[in-house]
Image (cartoon, rainbow, N blue to C red):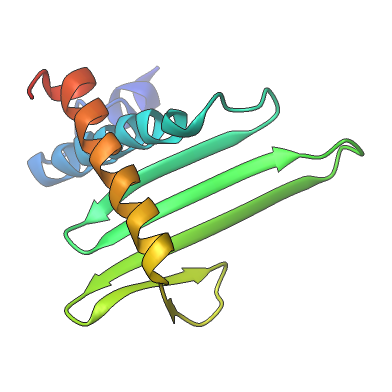
Length: 122
């Protein structure tokens, strides 16, 4: 019982509570972002979210018909000279113009959905 009190947030410092609240908010945003591109398969997980001012993340997990688990994480870095992506530890490569346009549309949908569902603004 006592450990629940300590781990439940009652004894956390102000900075620890803020960090926990931030992580919870990112999780909620990621869940909303993951649903923008259709239903998430029953045995899967999809997340799309803004990590910081220059970083977007797309993460997807699924189980194929043989029951094998798969996961792919794509990280998009917005830089002064363009947008770069890396998947699962591979080197960064510059986005093509068509892919950049698709990312731009996804970001726009993300902002609309997240602001409407979490922040009640638009």
